[in-house]
Length: 80
Image (cartoon, rainbow, N blue to C red; front, side):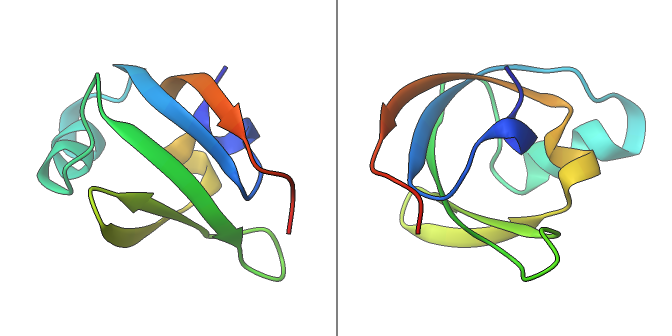
């Protein structure tokens, strides 16, 4: 499962980053790495970008970027 498949309220743990080159480095610079837990907060009105909460701060990711983040879903709080 990839991060772009999750909906608001879903929590997950990052399993693997499959992005390489600039995007892979950019994701790691933003604090996204395997083993990290995060929560999907919301999607923009047209579904892109999505906002996620990581270690107490929020970041926005495009769905095409989130597609490179493999995750394991750990909880579901319902869609908003």
